[in-house]
Amino acid sequence: MTEREVIVEADGGSRGNPGPAGYGAVVFAADHVRVLAERREFIGVATNNVAEYRGLVAGLEAAAELGASVVAVRMDSKLVVEQMSGRWKIKHAAMIPLADRARRLVAGFERVSFTWIPRAENSHADRLANEAMDDATLVDEVRTAREAEKPTAAPVAEDPVVSAVAAQPAPGWTGATGRPTRLLLLRHGQTELSVQRRYSGRGNPPLTELGREQAARAAKMLAAKGGISAVVSSPLSRARDTAEAAAAALDAPLTVLDGLIETDFGEWEGLTFLEAAERDPELHARWLGDASLPAPGGESFDQVRERVDAVRRDLVGLYPGANLVVVSHVTPIKTLLQLALGVGPSLLYRLHLDLASLSIAEFYPDGGSSVRLVNDTSYL
Image 1: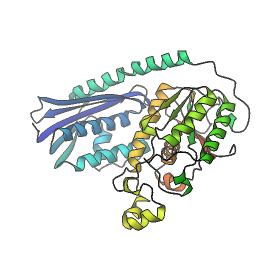
Image 2: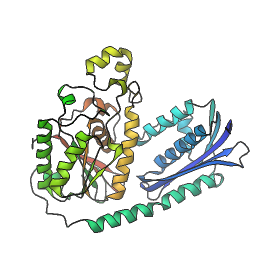
Image 3: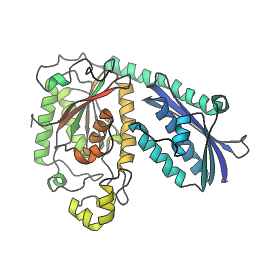
Image 4: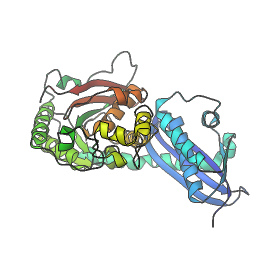
């Protein structure tokens, strides 16, 4: 049975701001008595505001699943209510894609209202958010077990690139504290589509002979570093084969993460830039400057950012202070650099990353971040 009118109450919290974070959302019937749906999730390390937006998105998704057409959103976050009502601007980069996702959900209803309520009136969603944050202990258990299995790290070699990975204090101008999780961002090696400069998203072309050579050289370079705890990879074969070479050279565990997959270019998959522009001239021109627009039948860069940011939070939560090799594709790597720099989507269109290149981004436990290296190919 569908519910035409519903009430969504949502909340989010972070024990540390940023710190272990979670959200809760509850959907009530119009009588504000019957509970139609509940959502809660531990989201890793995040700020209060990001967790609150995640709660809003979850509540709106649940309302849509119930077939609602009129939604009354009630939250104790003044910031979220004012921003979603259009009275306040969104300045924090991490919240922009979440707010965009919320707006897309809002557009699917006949009417949505946003009302601020005191925390005492939001107790149901608050309880769910706290239960989600309590789930952080499960992550701690996984991390503890993983740490117990790690071999003693080899000493870190001394050379200009390696020194960027070794334990170093935070750059003085960032003010960040603690030891960061360092992500060594390695783009996969060459494929035939990359030779032909075609959009290569969810397709699965294998590495060329040169691509395998690039992967081997990158693996040798990484093995010389030492002190690397694990390798994580996109599931696509061009990235996975590159990652397997690195994991073997490092004698480190390899984990495949779906969130690191390349952008879904939809109907532009396999086309050159010119072919896509000729096929959809107006859309392609707009797409080049609007991260919220997807390719036909594909995925927007804002959607990529949201899933890549979720991976980043998980990695920082599971590998605090560790060095990780992240093998992925152009857009996810640019997105991680964008997140570390705290800049807007223009970086996606202006930054060039070579095949099998290495970049390094650091994310600190207090929420700070920095970029140590971009597009190094000296080892190739």
